[in-house]
Length: 474
Image 1 (tube, rainbow, N blue to C red):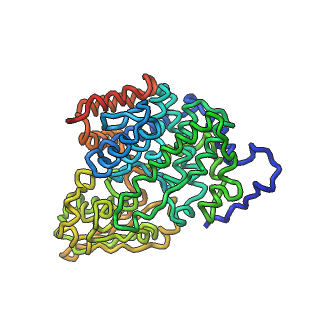
Image 2: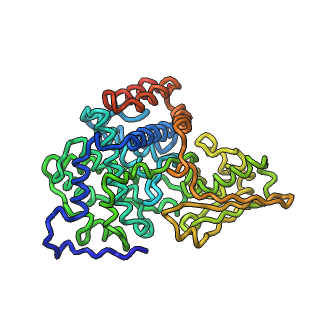
Image 3: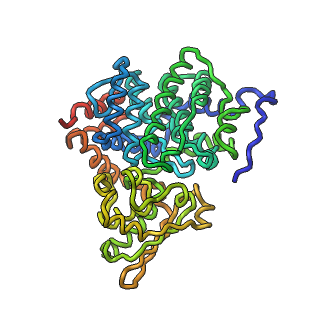
């Protein structure tokens, strides 16, 4: 555990600039597209494309159907596009819906150190405001990067304590990312952006209770609240509504309220040298990120050794305690969400389908007695060394024992999609096409890929949204 940082804000006579909230605002307010290394720009494009795919892939889900009815009925100015829908709404409402959609199928990006789904809070906000403001593509890219920096640097400072307290950082910290992305698009100076971050911090939220329940839909709202309220925070600040410019570090501020242990130096460490967006991972499998290293290990064994699911007598997974103890790991899941949170059931899908994409991990599988029987033969154990390394590392060892007595073992240090084990551009595009096929035509998917690829040299986000809206399937 980190030693708790003593908060002396109420006693200090140091100037405003000394605090991490102000320092973050100054860095982000001064950020320009020219400051971004080529690798950072490429990463932003990749995460934008991936997030759009996640949202499009969820268009047939019950969560999206309900959210569409509710958000559409709220009305709004019609200034922004809503992904996969024929109606338009205000920037906060559009971001809210798009964020819900992007997180439904559990395929959105993850930041390992901070235990954060970041894109689902930041990108829908940036997309909506970029359309509203008719921002250039370069400005949109820079805003996305600013949002990732704000969200993840704050999350780095308070994790894993924030998670241990029962909060999800995609909500509690994602709202800082949404506000920062919006503030950048509105060309805020450091003072106004400090106000926006202050207002965002006052609304930080996001309970982690859904994974302990019965598979309810509540988790989908966590990044949506962050995306929408971050926009509102920035819009208010732009009109002169003041916020606490020390909201993170002050007494009873964000860090003290959300974490028992925190390190505020992580917010400002290596500004402009380490870019958090390049330390973010993609998800190849449609389930909880904690399940990915075990899936990698099992798939490697069964594919290389030509093993059928029926040949497997048992599987032992050794991994970090958080992955073992923070959910029920039901072998007879109650819902599809419940199944996607379960390591044993995810491995059952992997063994029988030999893939765990969104089209492989389907609703009809959760009551399958064959998969339930396989899941019952999976044992998940905590490993002390791996637990100590979390969240810096998310590893797993997988031991597969066959009915004929043979055994095979794999150790996965970094699951597929981590910066140390990246998905290729071709794999990212293939994932997008597969997900997007639910809602748009193949030609439209190609047009979206091309529009994202060229966004920094083109006319903002309009070509992306035009390609999606013009290619919707009936």
